[in-house]
Length: 418
Image (cartoon, rainbow, N blue to C red; front, side, top):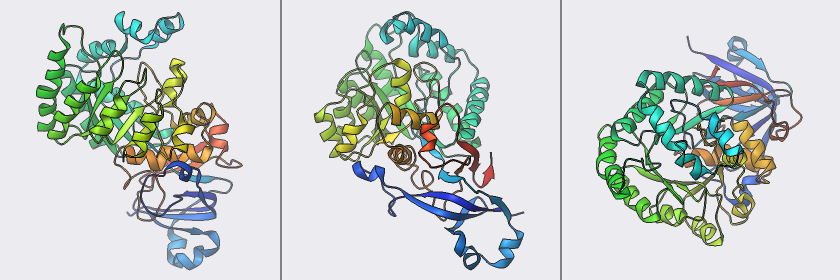
């Protein structure tokens, strides 16, 4: 049976503020296009029509109105599901003990030296069977969807050996096949250098000359990412690895400038990166380069919040006309939350973004950061009905304002309630 549903008396429908499908830059991020007292008609998982309640009977035939399941949304807003363009969803174990280490004064690099950090996750993952990794990741994904995530990018990078990286990416491919939302896969073999390599060049060569061809041979990833930062990979190493990725059809992304001004922005833009993520440490030179590029800066306020580091300068980025995006960085070490609603709250409280800027950054722009702009991030006719229905709230700004308790009442994915 064909499934159709009619959402009626919607207090406000969050429509894209510009018609063209493109990222919103600078002052455009604050634009809103809220359709009051609206309806959305959904058929076979897609949005068939959107309009004002007063036009409902003109827009839809009587027979449809009588036969369709009607959901009254009085007092509620309907928003597009979030696009999360940066996550490390697949991992073998949590790392809550590292929070305790950090709180007793140890730095990120000291924790790594003590056997924690990325290398700890790699060790645990190496010993975890593929089925177990899939099962735990799917359970996390289900929880994320219920909190409003409607598209997700997932990175490897807890493998750090050819075998384990491929295992992770195969798990991500299975998630892609089973998930009801668009999933993107990123190869992040250059996440850290395993201890057993006395010469780092050997590992970097392994990533570029063995891992990347193997990943491409099985068509396991959409992107190639590098952690270009102090204590991790240099700009030169980053360019070398991303070049190898490009030769095998992998679009570049970079974890850049989280811990210092590392040259990651320069390397990423030179390589034509789709997105540069983190960017806590940037000055005018980086902002100018970003403004002149087509690269999306993806800000991850959860990491700054959890690590207690200074957040990325979102206001300066917006003043420099950048297409700022927001994502979670969900991972077991430095941001153990993938809740995008909380990301909006942190963006407003810590990054001083306006609620509308945060909402657009977490939908339209973050969808672009993962090349999902045709599938995710906006409400429009013909699109998949991946929607958030709020509780009865006074305005959309209430969502980031009322942190710690969800303002989302129901999540719809492909026209089905989750």
